[in-house]
Length: 221
Image 1: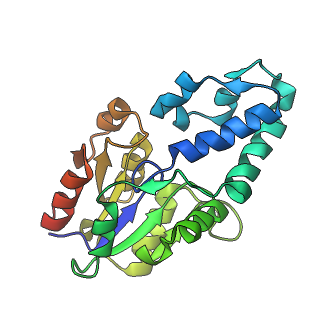
Image 2: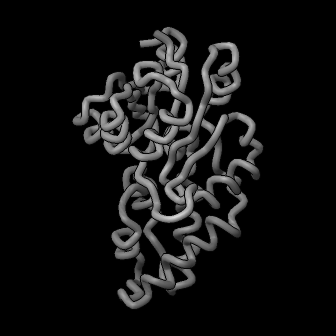
């Protein structure tokens, strides 16, 4: 059976956003009087660490009293200053998204990236028309929603059966969010997530390339 509803994580699954995120972090580090070692930034999995942990790698260390300023500077640069010049869709992703109508499928973004940042990226890069809808934790008024809750919302909104829905992501938490909604998950290892942690959660499928991903989406489960 082919998947009719394709739910996508954003960072590390649809798009390589790492360089621009690191650029914003380094901008904040310099404003606080230090820098982050380039070798540390070369390891993709470091990008998934809490910002407080990354802040501890700023040298010389500004002191914990500067973390609030650091966090705010990262947010301002990424959401308001960055033009996302080093953010791009992984090779082959655009082809998959553009074939959605032919495949009788609909594509949604389900991400933990804040709504304002996501919308600005999609608008700046000209990608908005590739998706039926995009949801972030703060897409709704009131309390922020978890990824599993965002998936549940799409299932309810579309009326699509769980077996016709798939979530595609690069981290262990993506697999868990899919499982909590009784839908399949395709884990991708070409992104930022830790492959060992991803595999430990046993996604329905695991692919090392967009080419492999495309084949599964075309052939179905």
